[in-house]
Length: 177
Image (cartoon, rainbow, N blue to C red; front, side, top):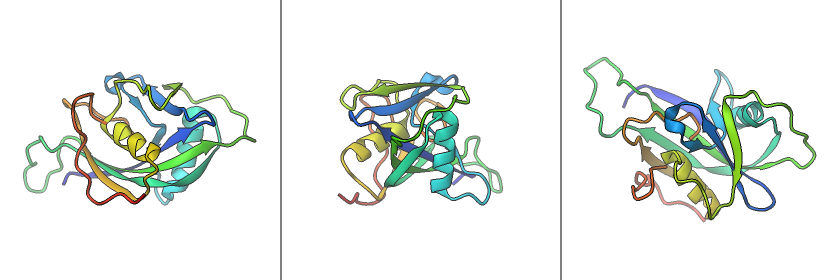
């Protein structure tokens, strides 16, 4: 295993059942879940609320943990002994969240194009973790352990499923319903 980066993301929905996605300016212009990296001595729920507020300007209520998603590069050759690979493995805590009805949006920090998408009409260009986590969240799953893989050397935004026709990585455990 390469170096490990800890990240958080959330499947944020509105009362109409739409999913909030963020399109980063880099990383292949794929859509991802709002989120980011944990800070030192910060809990995953606190980091998720902070990162979502920073990217969207909205306060959210975390409903539950959809699952833990490990993003790795299974096609990369193993690094030499004592060295890390070029890209770190990312372990993303993905939460289910809803925008607080009583919270007005602040100005966003930028760097991300936000858009609400109907659950049955998601964009084709989703990151591997986003595709898997949204499917799990919309199916009502919690406690999922899943591995996803990078596609074509793409660097997935922290907090971010393969392109259409390509399968996400296998589940590490059985999802609870």
